[in-house]
Length: 252
Length: 301
Image (tube, rainbow over the protein chains, first blue to last red):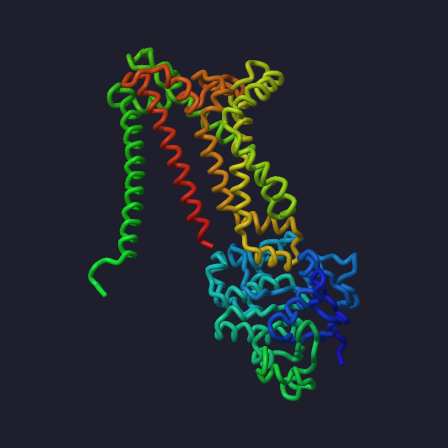
């Protein structure tokens, strides 16, 4: 049994008085795809955004619990947010490339804190776009505005932009919900390839998608974690009645 | 039910359309007549008084009552054109960093406090009549300039400073709009890649908003170029080529306001002023085209 890369324990989150997360414990092992499922408003995206501290941007949010990433508490006061976010990167629901060229998009993270040479940059950008499985589609148009590509291509450019800064963990917040089935399939294939190098945590509304690509699945309901475990087991023989009801479409 | 006779709603529809089209028609007639009037008067200098266009644009002597060595009236508009452009460009250069800084503060850094504090300030600056700006310029800025640089204190520097304050609210509020229009998800994307807030502002937000920010500057320049009264009060009103930033000179607009009461319709003196007005008109057309062009470029996202 490999030890977990990221362990979260007893995570509570309050929007003012409202408790949005009520004690979540999930561990994530390296080189796995972990799905977070549950009905809308159950807190799964909120939980995901705790993991790279994107919730810090919202005023009036209070977060408690421990988040142990490679032996460090990511909410410790001396944690460098910039480094944290390059190690735990995020892909959003809506493809959000910058309105720049594909090249500048992928180069963005690389240019933030260092000044790589042109050849080094070219090499890293090509590598990132190849890993995100979008290289063949954009290699002749690297100077074209990223917004001019299709939604699925934009989303993979966003994945490439993230891969370029070599994170350990990739958080994906419903990355295919704004895409058509074919583009979604391409994203899923990309994620399967990335599993060998990265740890992936994906929030999804699409149960088939979770069962197709993930190794572990966590089911959340009303801010509580109902059940977490191997995807193969959870989808076939869930322990809890709520999980079974949700998977069978009785609510949600 | 009578299907063929018009219903009450149809009649109302028609009435509304007639009112709308007549209003549009009147406005179009108005605009075309203004253009025709300015153009016909402005071109009279060249057609009736046989002034050479090139000499008009490049001549530095402005004295329409006198004839020069070629037997032509002395109507060299270059001093006014130069001064107009100089005060406009200098005012834009001075105002832009302040406007951008205020806009960034209001949108990115302290949206609540910044807007509460600075919004009324900007609205107040817009509301102050230009004659008041000119008056303040004359009683405060001109003496200061005189004290520091000597001379009379009037000229391009004083004009620039007055125009800077006058165009600041225009450029600022349009810059605020430009920054607000940058979608939230670009900020999240940048922060999630490990960028700091300042890096996000500099590398993503300003870059994404650039076409609209340029438009904001051009609108400010258009306002500076067309401002007459406040500039007239501090520029010196001498139709002389500016020799420095503190020498008395004259802009296109200030020359118009100063002289227009002293000329008789149809004379060369009057026609020459219309030619200045024509230049102003053409320049505002250029500013509009620039805004349009940049807006089009900015759309290709």
